[in-house]
Image (cartoon, rainbow, N blue to C red; front, side, top):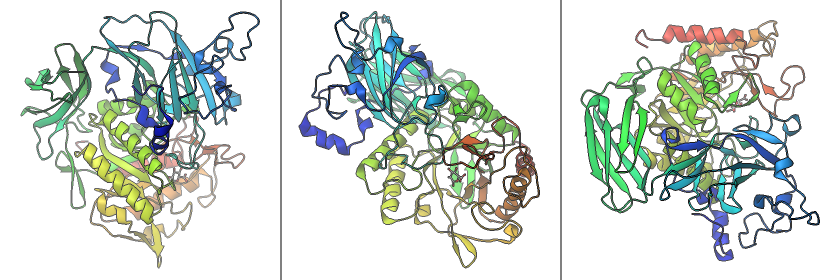
Length: 610
Ligand code: GCB
């Protein structure tokens, strides 16, 4: 456990490591484990001056200092009426967890900094030998976690899960779990200081207490073996198991089962021949119950099997060429103006995408919550998943690279059993330079080592050469799909002659246009050359679609964006008012004219069997 005692000698090393290195081996498939939800109202204290470390007077990560009773995580109450204690969680207000703080209290709309949250719970384990873990779906951005005054560890990265073991710390009654959340933007973080989305702070996804046997199934992967349409291959990772402990993987519906023994690290690899397997696709999103079993535990999951490859300029799903009819989505409930976190939120976004005629969604610009991926598995939507390596992050900084690698690891570990995910994306609009190219090459190699079965991409940039739009990013060579963002008619270029525009894409690979679009205030009407009107946006879509269809290798689109979303960069009064208005659907849920333009286009390219 990454518990408190870290000496100064190693502190220097720690500073160059991602803070999240303190989080432990990730438990996956939380939905099907023995769990107790710690969601609900949590008491909170807003702490812009870091008073929670009061008279601790050292840097937050100096673990040598003894916690004083005045530190917030000690949750101390005065022993008598003499004692000075200047905080009290129990009489402080509450915020709902999961949930961002910005949308729950008007005074916190723009708040960036530290906020402490506390919940209390009683818990009696089902068996004394069992192990306990506390799991967070995501905390934006830097979380420091304490249980009953003991520091469990820290995690950095606002969109990926983490857990800490709490065996021996949980007691039957009166546990208090305190999380210091800091959402300050930082130049060396991923993402960095400047983004075009709201920096929602807080415990934005579920918090769960998990009870496991002494040796338990921590993680597993099962997919079609590359090159095969019926051999399933993967691994099971046990935690706390003795060498040779037996584990079986079965799919009862297919009548297949394979027993293996774990090695000294608790790892077992397996292969299963499943000749009767029916492949998952958007037209037929078939999921099978997969059962992973040891002598002490049975863990179930619903998993689909499909292949995703490329051949020349084609993207092949189960061996057949496919066109990705997509849309980009932020993790936001547009109608409520808050971070999305529930199944209902996921259903709203994905139903809108389906209404638009999509078979594919780009989950921008960071890993979304697991509901989105599981729902997409069930609905038959393909997914582009990405990490927030966005714009100009500190490419030369090793700690920034570690943070990006860690977020990729957590995303792939959580989602590699989801059939819907076909593309891992390592970056968005990152201007080429030696440092950036080396950074992305590192991420690409890392991602391929984590998962060799999916396609890799990144949203690249274009540049103009003699009136020709050129895509020639050297990173394209390392990717399976060359994707780029372009904003003809919004940030540059004219619309009337867009269909005649010349494009040069220096690659024979499949091309996906990962973004195009323009703002429209829903209900504002005018001529098609009047910015901010629905007619302007409609014309922009018409002309861009005509232009982009002429790109010979075009195999997909994910225009920007499904719904209006909050962004502090978007300030024009009466039009933007803190919202990026490039949505095809307004924040009141009303479809703009361009929604129907794109829907009609998708109808023309949709094959009959999909
Ligand atoms: C982009 C970014 C996206 C922005 C969008 C815009 O290129 O990738 O995050 O929100 O443009 O609206 O400018």
